[in-house]
Image 1 (cartoon, rainbow, N blue to C red):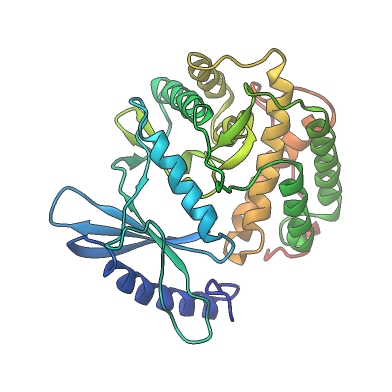
Image 2 (image 1 turned 30 degrees about the vertical axis):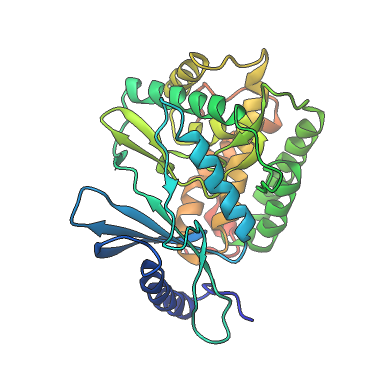
Length: 348
């Protein structure tokens, strides 16, 4: 059988989206939803649609990629169900189908694997645009702390299965990056990436997992996965939730903030959960780990190449500081000059 998610070329991507819309329409028949409109959102680890109704209620329909098993998807929904019981959290939650299932398998074109589909209650809010206010950033720190507090209280059932984001997953990200790095990195820069990865792995090897610093995390808590009602942040898209250090989540958010706002976010987080002494060195390690992991995720998509190249003046500056053992998280770091002519896959 062929994987449902075949999107390595523009032609395959268009074919995938055609199959996906048919699957979405079939899936809607499995849920007790009087819908009036279906709007494509994006193709990423899942294919997502906003399902509109005549009422205020909207829904999110997700077609899951072949990499996630039914048990993993069910486990994500189980975690979200528990998180929503917290009075101070509002996160997406699964919707039962007509037969009482939270995960449905839908027929598709002959020869392709049948994808799993879930429906979620839509979380209202707007994505951030422009510069965040100090208050908004502080509140992101607060809600991240609340998220970790609630997840720490969750007792997973015996059949709970979610990935772990640590040394093993990072090694896999580096394997992928090795295949595609030449599209946005020079050979010299790739050498520094490899040295930074080795330093990340060596620091992970000596970290001690405790109930205070390790548990279930969002796994992809960048600012694009947070919507806002005023300055109240609401985390969404828990598709990568799993086990990891809580600082991994914090680092994911810090990537999109300038140094002063990074300090403010930490203040918000520590109003809920105190960080261990010496956390800055570990947080910088996760900052580099998440940054490299992000590039691994996007490097195989040629549509992302130009943006990856543009980011290197900052990314390589951070890596240089990291390799030299110089702090960088709360300091303004000057960008480095990039020799674009040395990038093998550059379209320049």
